[in-house]
Length: 112
Image (cartoon, rainbow, N blue to C red):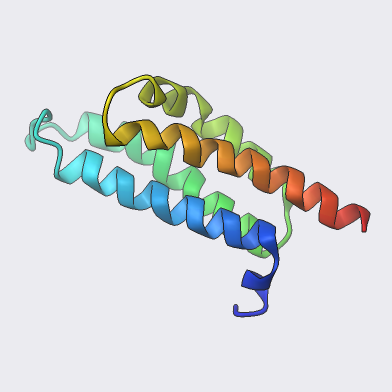
């Protein structure tokens, strides 16, 4: 794993994916504006934010550039929505953009 993190694409995907998971935990469990009794929004945000984050991390480690692009496209709609909100959840937009940068870095690695 240490060798994998020397590659900039894998490092960026790991940081962005981890940040997304941590932000999702704050959004789902420590958000004062949501009710803890509703599981619907929690499930929706899990499948639209956390699952693509894990996919981006794993696919960057295994050098699967198409899966990184899928993770970006999968998380893009909700990330754009949250990027327009004031507060900490606007960082979801930055983590989603980091998936796209990871994809371009993987393309550059492939061409070398």
